[in-house]
Amino acid sequence: MSRTNIPAQRTAPPTTTDRLPAAGDAAPRPADAASRRGRAGAWAELLRLPALPTVPGDALAGAAAAGVRPGPRTLLAIGSSLCLYEAGMALNDWADRAEDAAERPHRPIPSGRIEPSAALTAACGLTGAGLLLAARAGRPALAVAAPLAATVWAYDLALKHTPAGPAAMAAARGLDLLLGAAATGAGTRAALPSAALLGSHTLAVTAVSRRETTGGSVLAPLAALATTGALTRLVTRRRTRLPAGRRAAAAPGLPGSGPPGTTGVLAAALGAAYAATAARPYAHAALNPSPPLTQRAVGGGIRATVPLQAALAARSGSTATSLLIACLVPAGRAFARRAAMRKVSIT
Image (cartoon, rainbow, N blue to C red; front, side):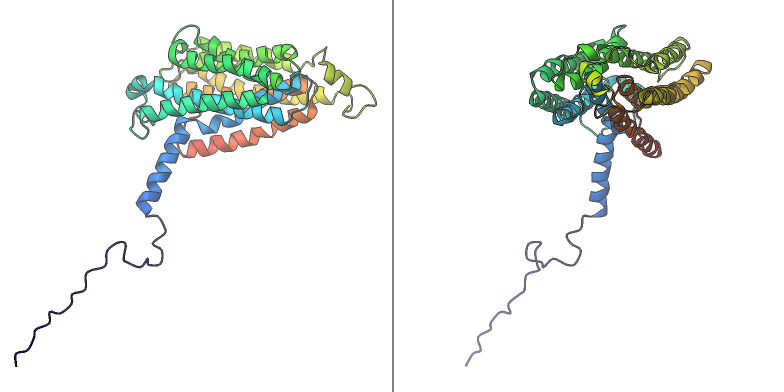
């Protein structure tokens, strides 16, 4: 009797879907984790995250100038400011991608780490988010946020390399402060002087930044140094006429009134901190207008924005808001140190 040959059953090698997961399979591969960290670092560089601590003080100083304590609408105004600020940063690099390819090939877009379309999409999305948050804060806030967004886009796309560039950037900072005042519902008229002072500082910083890649400008740092001195003197002098809400809170015997001269001393201290942060790098850039020292001058001017905002709040008679803004100073320094270690520019 013949024997039936039964073929031996072959065991197919396990596929990816059949294989039981081994311990540690869920953990990302080192290459993937490094790639994600690289993308996150590129976006942090594109959006200039180390400069973010300079933004919330705009709305807070605006609320202080209007004579109103910060509230939920102030938080919405701060969120709107942050979104519009970052939209401007993304749009700036998208608009300058050809120039950066020649002068700053290490930037995220010319180096290929971020696609130009992604940067433009981010700018559009952040602008929309900023306007939406302003609308949630009320119609007066949206009425300020809309021209603020238009100014940001006009600066990056058309005005940056024209004589009107520094003035446009100054207007954007001033409008950002007015956004905080408008969100309180108390109007923006009382905040106009503070907006003008903050805009003057921004005008000086922007004028210096126009030569940060080439250097060679002595006049711009000298003008910024003179502006810093004038602003320091102005912010250390308390306003002779406070907003109505602030006058009521400062009446003798009422809650919220501090010891006489408290805000004056605070404004003087913060004004000195502002001058110390901005004046020294400006002086160095004036003596030696090389690109590295000019870039340091721009960075110093940007960091000096926070003590200036705090001094403006103190000048308006708001001690609590002034101290709240001043708390952002160490955060800005920490961000700047980390940015320097990772070679991420604040400018």
